[in-house]
Length: 275
Ligand SMILES: [Zn+2]
Image 1 (spheres, protein in one colour):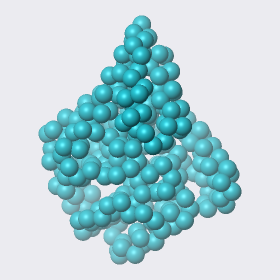
Image 2: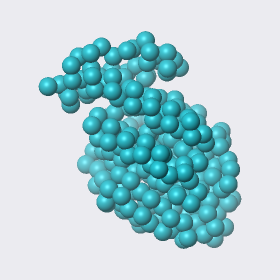
Image 3: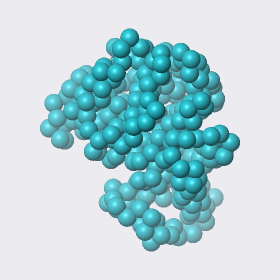
């Protein structure tokens, strides 16, 4: 399996499917695993790496949000890990939809279902407030609710190490995909941009595609997302045509699937913003 980043106790695995990332953070007294995914062989590879390195340390499993590609490996780790998730994820009323998508995924590629398909409903650390700090072992974790892309996103920051785990925000391989709310997305993006201005972020891990370790690039990703949102909002509010040519010049690689996501965003903009 591709390892897209490895340094200072941080390993980022990248699936061959949609460049979806899975992160393993090793601290002196625990490991944190984030969104293990997609293919059974890839999750098996990740599980083997976790076991190889774990020793007698506690394992925590964090979900950045409930989109099915990010929770697909839950059952593989549920008995060996303590779960961290937002309260919104744990109480998600549309969980069946994600379960259905997982079932459909195994079915359409003739993949034997590797373990029962289940949804996380309980957690050792359940993040309820907009912002919470938790101490795990000797490591401080900051958690921020991050609705917008979907309703139950959670952003995680480790101030001592400067590690920012952003879920599906600030991905280099895609513009904002918005399944939930454009105004919520804007707020989340603004707080992410504030955090990047305020803190010393040395590593940004996004849910799809490469990490970033460069301040310039971090800010550029924020600016690009902002560019997309502002045109989406102008389209939704007053019908100003979206600069499609510019969009596909910036994101030339996956026009069929991303074209569909863009069309869905445009429809949401009309629904949510039209006066
Ligand atoms: Zn995703």
